Length: 238
Image (cartoon, rainbow, N blue to C red):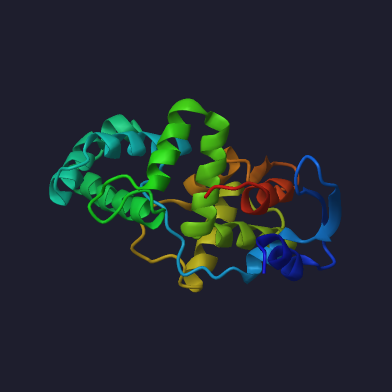
């Protein structure tokens, strides 16, 4: 079954967003009534992975770092990453904290499949780095796809949407982030040893335009379903 047919099969539900799907310049387009959240709900997620409260730009800086240390041993790269975290994150960290963050970053890069077991850049890593250096829009699109589909961030988007529909009205942005983290911990999608903050992850989703900025009047985040469809189905990254 094609990706588009699979999407439509799981997404044809009452709550809808109108999407035009184009199959090529010479072909006509079709419009379907689809629910992006229904599609996301069907996707299996084992764990939500993030690291060191990295911003989107700092993830790009990590790619630059890995491109410069290829060929060195894993232990050397890990130690070098911990030593250079200040220049990557613009934060002064104690040695112990820097080493923990370095381990988390290595894990995130492996989960995203942008580095291999020997910490060389993969084809995905090289492509993402090239976009980071040459095309901001392509970098944001590609990174959004990797984080959503490989690092489990689809589940964060889905649970955020569920909170928006629930009885939790009047929550502050901080309360929302804490409630969301508790929800994901309860589902065992976040480990209790994870040291990153949910607010930082949500900031990344806003920057990637997957979530709309916090609505201070309605006191909630809202997903951008057109953007989600665009990243998950319409664009091609492989």
